[in-house]
Length: 263
Image (cartoon, rainbow, N blue to C red; front, side):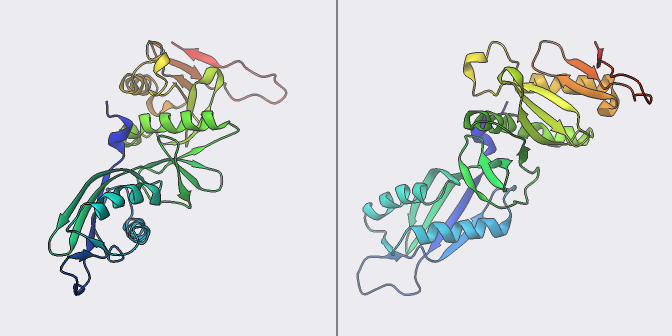
């Protein structure tokens, strides 16, 4: 299983020097001039360039590449400049007048009301829609901050499997906190997937199954109920998947039905 950090792809930024070096014998690099050399597949190009410009502005005046002081300062400045930056993996001087910075970025996995984007570790990345594939899941409240963080961590746990599930016709688009501190995903067809707790809740590691096993339970449920037609909820965190069928259509004047269980 991929860890949450692996979901957070790596981007590279090239800070290109000024056209002419000042009278000083030292080479200088100007962070105000930025080229994006590579970006994560999930990150749109306009966002990558906007982030590059933001980081370049945060680094301040040109820096000397003939000493370590300026580049050491850049590491802290980059981490402080944007919540998108999780780690400065490499900062390398290249003479004359260039520096290559390789960053690990946080990936948005959750969207709150008002289009507030959150990463797997609960950092607020900003506001506004983002054109990623798959899109961040929408959080359905209410929920306290701990509930939101747990839903974000669970969304990251599910992320590596969402394309596979979409190929099977299961499109997950929402997440909420259910009873017992267990996360529930909702599909576009309003089928509830009772996921359980995230892998960050290590105190429950012996109770809830690994994400790959839970997804396997969902695929097994799909074999029994293609497209999950007629299914209201699938419980995934237990040793065996549990399928709860939707009640049949109610005749006019009839009372409510209890959900039917399959298996």
